[in-house]
Structures are given as structure tokens and as C-alpha cells.
Length: 408
Image 1 (cartoon, helix red, strand yellow):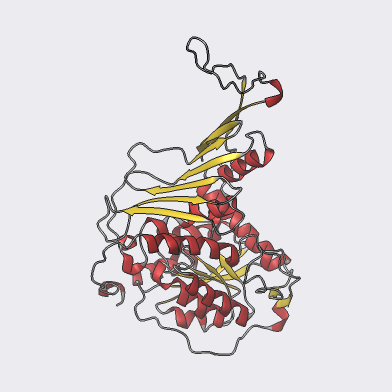
Image 2 (cartoon, rainbow, N blue to C red):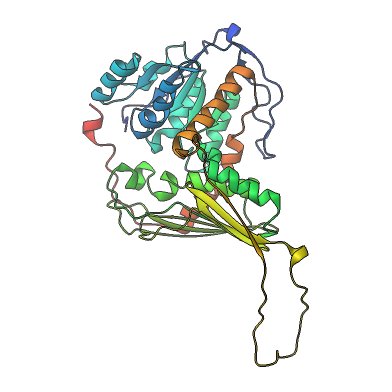
């Protein structure tokens, strides 16, 4: 998409000093880049709406980001969008009353924007984000944040140089079912966790641009950042000791994968099993936990977990000699079962996640709160994804560039 776009030339920042004040030290996961974002400018604590511009008016730009902004006019004001397709620009002008540009560089030259959301196609995420940061704007970037550690490091360096925030859009960390699952794990009732399986799978055929490697398509980069971010959270954002990945093409019309299986192993951590499949006719639970004392199963519609109390279990001891009979090891463990169901606000998990994410961004930009989702955390995810691609070299279609009808 946006094949006419190219890097912006360096230019002076046009940020009124009255809009910003110093940020207190930034708290982030220890990392070789942890020195970044230590003293960033911040918007004042005034509660006027954040002036936001959205690059891209496709599925994410319109149906996720602008959809949320329109529900929260007291927090966010859409002042401009950019998209090469005329019908999308006209719709934005008509429905949102904002300015619309066919070239995002012209939008970035405005100088009256507080926050830019980069919802362009995946292969344009790194460069357009760097352009936005260089133009002096705090920038949210859609997933995938990047497709290599080197690309992400360039983005982080641009944010550091510009003294602006790079905010990854990893809203699935706010998913109510994931947060509840994490609470159950932390409670200790399941004992030591042996394995956590995360499945973002279903059965579907797909034939759009996100099935093409040239445009950074495929299940791992399209859907994968959601379960992979959750997996990295379970590993405290540390690089796994071992990564094993298998990819395949089953129902896709493009050259990118639509089946991904990943196993992550780390000392003193559970095995993490991530599956992102478009050929699962009998869907699995989103989460399955294998624990020392019990387990958990479920997803957005609800979770169920059961476990036993070791203090109330029958006493047993190892018997090395053959059991009489022959017989099998049998006992009755009284299992305790608990469940969780989403409340009214949580039932639409997709909307709930975006609302929670943008509520957090507002507190960061208007109340000097600390960002909970950092590029340093996502850097580990990108490193794992990069290794998965290294292990699976799929054949590629000849590159053709972006379709001409999208660049007129």
C-alpha cells in the first residue's frame, strides 16, 4: 500500500513547549535498551482531548482505532486521517469531520497533533513510524510492530532521538480472559505450572494482501502478535532458551503461512505451546493449562479451573515392587472447581481490550503515568518471531509491489 510514500527528510520539531513537561524516570523490563525513554516530554495534565491523527483507514485504522475514538470524544479528537483511497478519505471527512490526506507526509507536516496512530499495512509500519517520530509525535504502531529486531531497534532509536514515545498496540494483554487466567496462575492453586497452551485458531480460507509475504503477511505476523505477547508475558519478557516452530500453508491463496505451531522452553518456566491455525475445524480452547495440582481451560466466553487441596489428599508413598493383583494406582482426589464468566463490560472482549488500552494511553499522555506496554517488551516477541521465520523458509511469489489501483 502507499507505494508513493518514502522517508521524510529531517526537519525541526514544532512542539509548543507549553504542551510538555518532563517525565519521571521510566520503569520498564530490564533490557539492553532499558536506558531508552528515561526522560521523555509529556503532555500536560490538562484534560483536554488528545488530538489524534490516524494513518490508514482500513480494517484496523477505521474499525478499531477510529471506532474507539468516536466513543470517547472527551479523551480523543480525530483531527486528520491519511489514506490513498479516495472513498475512504471522503468517508472520514463525512463521518468524522476531520481533514483527510492522500499522502501521510503532508499530514505529518501539520504540527498540531498530539498523537499519531500508524495503522498502515504491515510492511509500512517501521518506516512510517520512524517518520512520525521524526516529525515530533508520540506514535502508536499497530501490530506487527516490526518483522525483525533490527527494524525495531531503528524505531526505538528514532523515538529516543526525538524524545517521543513509541507505543506498541498490543491490546490483547488487556483481554479479560487473559488477565483472569494470570490471576489463577498467580494464586498458586494449580501448583507449579507445567504447560500453557494458547490457541488462536479456527477454520477459514483467505485471499487478501495479508496472505502475501511481500507485504509481511501470514498468521504469525497477522494474528501471532496477540498470543505471542501473552506468551512473552508468561515468560516475564525473557528470551526463551529453546524455540521450535513449524509452519505450513493449507487454505491460503497467498504464499505466507496459515498454520503455525510454536514451542517455547525456558528453565524454571512452563512449556509454552502457541498455535495459530486456519485449518482447525474443531476449535480448541483459547487457553489450556497443565498444572501440578490441576488445570484450566477456556477463553473469552469463560474459564473453568479445577484443582485438589494437597492437605486433604490421601497420603501416598512410592512402592517399587509390583502392585498386587495386578492393580493400578487409583485414588479419589476431591477436586475443587471454580469458574469465571465475563461481566457485561467484558463480554465484548475485542472492544474491552481497545478501551482499556486507550484509557491507559490517556493516563500516560495526560497524567504522566508509566506506559505498561513498552517496545522493549515487544522486542523479545519480535526476536522469537524472527527465529520462527528463520526456521521455516517458505517459497515466495515474485514481488509485484502494491496494486496500482491502490496508488491512484
